[in-house]
Picture 1: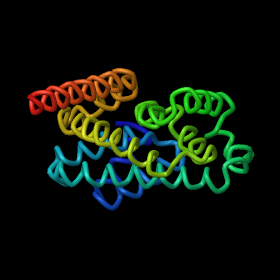
Picture 2: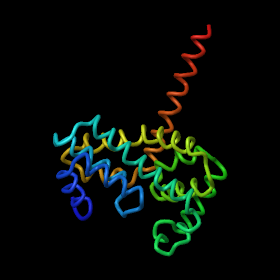
Picture 3: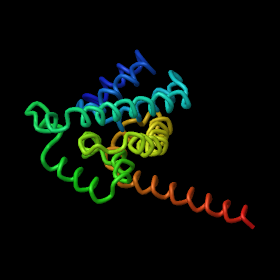
Length: 203
């Protein structure tokens, strides 16, 4: 591993769960380290025996939700000031914000779910959701269910690839749409299973 991923790995090896929680929170606020990669490295620590998979997934879900809710709250309180501030232009670019606003107005709550799998516009969507005064409970529920799907996948990728963590990082960096497809398929299967059981119970 090279560069920021190597530094991130060394940091998380030293601070494990607390380090993972802090980095994910900062990722949610826009530091230039993708939270998806952070979760993969968290899975790598599980492979090394430094952490346990269930606890890593739990900390991962808490970390991303806290970061997302912080952005949502900032957007709700200071939406226009944040997105127009020159210091945040590198995070909330005009293109990203335009897409975020378009998706939110067109697809509403579903956009929050999809944004968890689209790192390029995720922060913009969360701030925009707050700025547009989306219901806080709706935001949390959609983000929570998306995290329940995405976090275990990323952590498991790091655990599965083990010593070939470079391969996992490269795969995750290029596979946002694949992971989104897996998530949507999982939701579809779960929905079909639920409807089948409900229909069977009514007979």
